[in-house]
Length: 425
Ligand code: LLP
Image 1 (cartoon, helix red, strand yellow):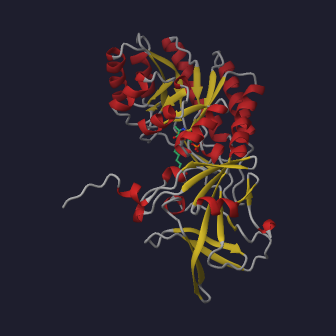
Image 2 (cartoon, rainbow, N blue to C red):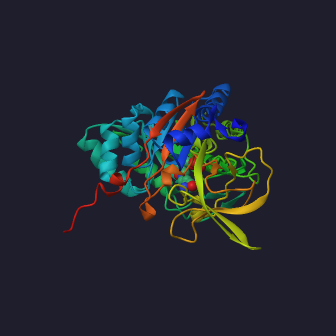
Image 3 (cartoon, rainbow, N blue to C red):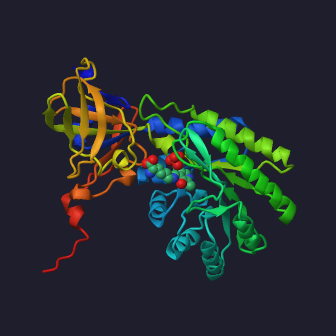
């Protein structure tokens, strides 16, 4: 009855569960590679200089960063922890970019010591810290200025926020961005390679990117006139949408790239500026659909004519997105793929919290305790946002590729949970 079982990357999930237990994150590595290549191959075909930086906040582990490295990606890190992981993974420092709206002096120091490719400068305080550190280390750095172009993507539409009300970056309209450039333009050790913007996440259209690029170019044109400055790099961030449920209709990844590149070329030409290197920072679209979480179904509670609750052995500790953003997921009973749909159930997590519901109203075959549930598209912001609420140890992560499975993050033990606790007796 093996065809009743879900297979991932050529492996039966029954075998994976037998070997590694549940809850279990399973990544199909071919899918990660294909997503990465959809971006890189499209850039190559458009004859433009580019970098595709994997946004490691979506899922960071040594193995994952090694796959990103193998695929020739650059890397976006937002903390010392993500930078440390990158270094442990042997990621080439010159391809690492560091973000953050409140980088600490330790974080910046590590970035400079490691000589990473570029720091995405977010605010005036950070400029002061950098000015101090480049002297202390007597080392030059490359920076991008993070700009808030006043466009926010809300998945299906875009909001023009006149006041550019965001904790991130320098705004354009009140001239903060120009002021930041002016303060660095003649700096001997801080080289402004260009600008960065990120308009949002889980975006299904190209319109918002086009609007952002136009605003950036109005600014770059002004910078050219005023400071004789031309950006070598324009980084347009991440945010390319993925399919969680049937409702989601993302574009093929290459279409985002084509639109971004064409708009940058068109705007550069319009303003008589040279075409810069174009960088992007996709996270979710590289790993999201490649990840599946396998749970074991435990208790089943039926409220006649109301609802049937099916509880699994994980929940908001391994996937906080439904509780935090009302995010929707699709799932299958992984050991009953060919059985007819019989009922509508709701999937509950096991945390002591009523809000710990993973899926409302999922159609399934007849479910019994002991069945396996596979929740799809959990590869981004699942493990990376996992937490220890109720002292549940974090799940294990397995990579499968061409019929071979490899444990890449061990399941936490109970000892791990108390390792930093000190006695007060
Ligand atoms: N670059 C910057 C500057 C970002 O802030 C982000 C995401 C990305 C790139 C990657 O975006 P992506 O391609 O993954 O959409 N925890 C939320 C998502 C927060 C995203 C924050 N920034 C979630 O689970 O949906």
